[in-house]
Amino acid sequence: FLKSHPEIDIQLTIDYGLTDVVSERFDAGVRLGGEMDKDMIAIRIGPDIPMAIVGSPDYFSRRSVPTSVSQLIDHQAINLYLPTSGTANRWRLIRGGREVRVRMEGQLLLNTIDLIIDAAIDGHGLAYLPYDQVERAIKEKKLIRVLDKFTPDLPGYHLYYPHRRHAGSAFSLFIDRLKYKGAV
Image (cartoon, rainbow, N blue to C red; front, side, top):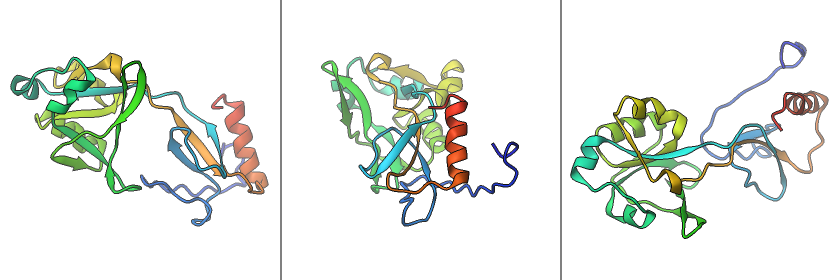
């Protein structure tokens, strides 16, 4: 985009919280999933994200391997801390043929995927993470994937911006480029 439009400047800020693009004076934000406030427009810019529940061989030598969602109650979770809510993420699972969000209990609440992977490999519990982040550890047999038929994909990344916003020409060009490249 910048090669085609050298006259445009972009400021990119990475924040793992939910940014209020209006009060922070951003043109747009990017987040996982398409659930937005009613005054926001969301444009899909990425594919769905396959998820995985994983644990280490050491962990499973001390605990049974879960074969159903109801058996997760007997397990420790290594959870991702969500700064927007100040709590752990909820795991999206299939139970009884429908999608549910489950709050898993655990001793570790961590704020990066890398820390969660390390803790899972060290045997501290089960982790719920994007498959591409744990694929290598699974192939190297450091982690074992479980309950894969109960873990639906997460909706992919979306660009969001205020509904009642007058889009400047630079922002409009950016949106058009996303549409042209097939991101939407």
